[in-house]
Length: 393
Image 1 (cartoon, one colour):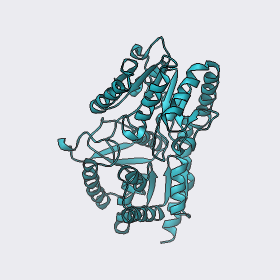
Image 2 (cartoon, helix red, strand yellow; image 1 turned 180 degrees about the vertical axis):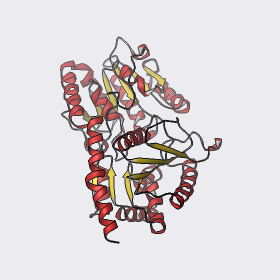
Image 3 (cartoon, rainbow, N blue to C red; image 1 turned 120 degrees about the vertical axis):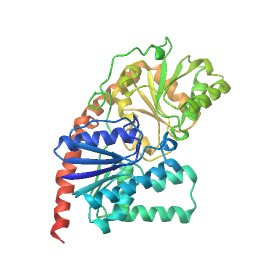
Image 4 (tube, rainbow, N blue to C red; image 1 turned 90 degrees about the horizontal axis):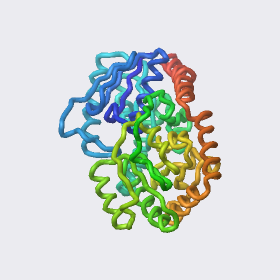
């Protein structure tokens, strides 16, 4: 097939959705499909066999796009939409693979160009905006109506987690939907892992480690408050990897205010190729996320790390993991402290938990499993639906 992929993110950057898009491109091109990609200007340039990249104009004021909704991202989306129109007017494609909000663009353009689209749901835009801004009911209902229409007109949909599959099935009961979970990055299939000096994260005390951005929804406030409660009962070190300078400054101030400044270490961003080396220094890995329905990509690498996982008992986690492979706690500081004390105080139970998690990754969340599911989706779902639509014309 000739596929137009719409990826409204800085590409390539080492964040969840861009990494998933890279795996998508690598898998589809490796499966013999011809791929054109329209994406943002910002990001690392990649050379991929069978893939051609087309970027929006590089405007300095539109750089530094963070995860989630923003004015910068909206402007880049509009520029992308104009580029989609130009390409559809001059090129022929079998299908559009539209990631996140670009599915709305593909939906609006289908009556004019007749190109069917796959809706790639990495997040529900109405839910995402409501969680961030607490939308008024009429506005939320309007956004949900737009999402439903885009899903119902799609040829098929991919969801990155069971919760988003359920969103799609409720909105479009007749739509074929497949869940394609993210994978561990530790196997080196996407980013080769390097043996680097990770001594900054090495301590004689137990190390509690968080990796990821420092946006509020990730629950760093909860983690630090729980850590402050646990520290008087057991000496340990908190290592936080990731975040912008502004976010790191804010959480350093919070650590000082909580009285744990000497035990909280902010290492800033680290290359994904060093992820395995840093996770190897941890005694406990933590995902204290507070909101969201999609499962964070880092969860799969955490599970593959051989270290016990402490996570909040919210659907963002529990739709994929259970008590057999992670220690799940309520999203409040006392429960977080209890979890930290339990996992650092019972090494045998923590090791058994981590071993079961690693086995689960090998069976369900590997790069090989991702590749098989995606190619089967295009071969057994998308291709027959496209033939059916062509035959019905």
